[in-house]
Image 1: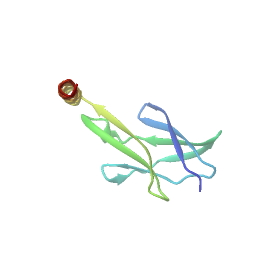
Image 2: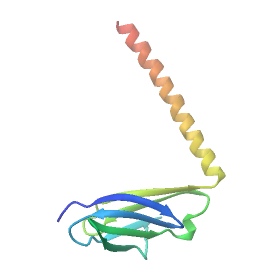
Image 3: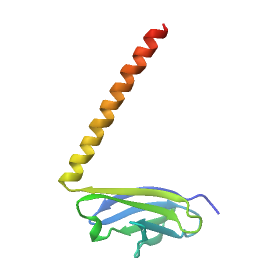
Length: 119
């Protein structure tokens, strides 16, 4: 069996699309909130297979919604995508990024101090 390679194409109008490079038709499963999604479509295309994933309406709401795409035969993760929606989620994400930046600055200062002491 060949190794599957997933390339994201677009997310538009509630449909996530990707392209799978594979010699034979892959069996793909998509998981959201611990459940396998229905209506995932794999269709032949030039150079492989097109993957079409209709996103459930429930995922188009406030918060962070993660989808994991896997090879159903081997359970190997092929990729994932995340939808973040709503003002509270955007504020939380910005706060997390700011916290990471502050921690990185703190580590840089500590590293520089330790480096200057050893010289």
